[in-house]
Length: 277
Image (cartoon, rainbow, N blue to C red; front, side, top):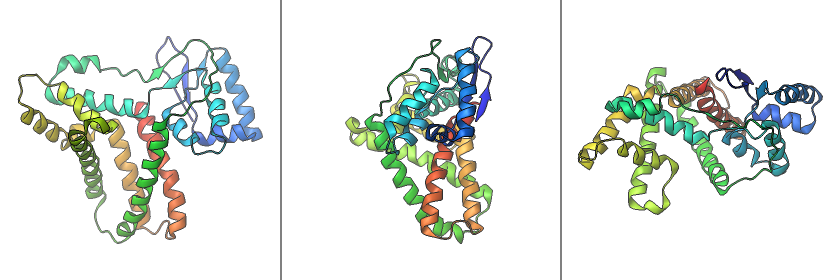
């Protein structure tokens, strides 16, 4: 739970994580009492409590997902953060524009508006799109890969600095691989592939396509990419996890699956939301 000032013309922004919201929804007295105080501040327009794509993804795993989703949207008053992928894209495009010296685009993206702010207090019905289901499928795959990889982490002797560079390379390769899939089948492109598509559009039309691709490769291998807030936070959280496992955490597979599933959401939340604080 974190409060952020977002300019003089707007109320303060309070981010409530899924743990808080789900316990308030279940009727936990302490959390219900705090929620009632928050609602009073919202009604006075002193506070906004936006919902995010992270809330949607986590809520979709509940049996009563629509009920919990409605509860979260009601708390938000119709205000929401931009989706996680929009924030990630804008951070990369702003960084890449600076990398290639495109001052026009850099100035346009200088201040990222993270919140879709609604001055009225609205209630809406919860709707969960197919993309959320797809994200859940991908998340399950990532968790399984993390469980498999954790066996190798236990015997690893790499330093934290080496682990950090490995995480950056993995993220860079992921963008590359998704873009290659896009080239082979443009009708089935992922959101990550669209990052490189947009990056190519930031460069002058007169530059040959091969040089544009090379410039994108140089960027993903650069410190500029590593310093984007989302990837800076994400890489360090994963390195910290690797260190915990190397020191003996989660030795049992069933415990590892439970812990890593929750950790995936923590990485998603902190990398996207906290990178804006």
